Image (cartoon, rainbow, N blue to C red; front, side, top):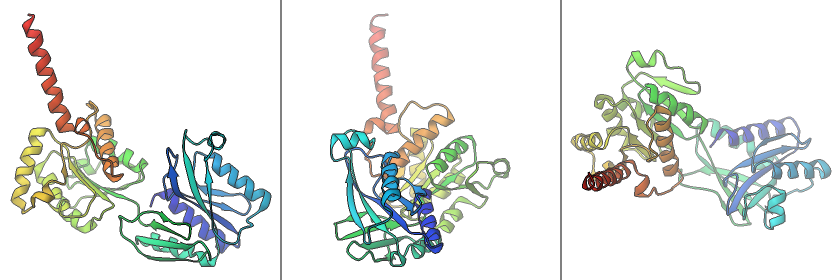
Amino acid sequence: MDSVNLEVLKSSARWLAQGHRALLVTVVKTWGSSPRPEGAMLAVRDDGAVVGSVSGGCIEDDLIDRLRQRGIEQTKPEAVKYGITAEEAHRFDLPCGGTIQLVLEPLTKASGIAELYEAVEAGRLVARTLDMETGVAHIDSAQATDGVDFNDKRLLTIHGPRYRMLVIGAGQLSRYLCNIAVGLDYQVTVCDPREEYTDEWNVPGTKVVRTMPDDTVLDMKLDERCAVIALTHDPKLDDLALMEALKTPAFYVGALGSRRNNAARRERLKEFDLTETELARLHGPVGIYIGSRTPPEIAVSILAEVTAVKNGVIMPPSLQVGAAKTAHGMVSSFVDSELACFA
């Protein structure tokens, strides 16, 4: 769960405890382009105070205006759509062709928001099922692969800990990568037993551990909401992390290095009793091909690939570093040979 939605739950629970009424707004379906994904949430207090986001701002303004004029009149959840017509899309600043469906839920004790917030804060991954007819909600354990499901009679949403990222190595590239990862709302842990690197680490919002990488992977109990990126260039550290991480359900495991180093790494990892299926999960050379050369550019390249994998986007070979560099090298060789004919 991203920090914005967590703040929505926290504020909603607090407002109810203080005696306020509140409306919880959840994005349940989108068509075409949409500024916020399914599952995004907004809470509006009875006096117009707001936390969270479901659009670029215009839908929020409309909801706040409606609430201030009429108060929270509804007694049970209802579904509404914005952006069905071109006029609405323009009015609410939705991208061309975009339509968004929201569930507006007046919160009560039966909503179980305080219990939901406590479960998320405790690190549990839970599913909340809302009965659209009664407004009663209950929570159960969930799988990381579950998502938002809405069928007019019930709304199922998944809530849980933020996505986690384990970065092996506290070097210069890691600094740039971790700064961006924090901005992407990952809970970032940096592992490096080398004191000369960790003593100077000062990236806000990250946690540094000095344990050995394999022990760190085991201690973190990685799940489907985790990514592991090895950046030290030192096989004694990177391989230790990879040999354990590839056995976990982590959605992304990658390592920095050239095509030749990546091939050598795969051969070494075979000695650690990894299966071909597990080895096939390794992303390397890590990142997408954008011609990156500097540490900040390489960090962008890596996190672009992590984001694509997280969102279920299949990268074409032309964007995969290894294939793209091979193709680029073949083109360069062809051009050189053609130019040689005219020399």
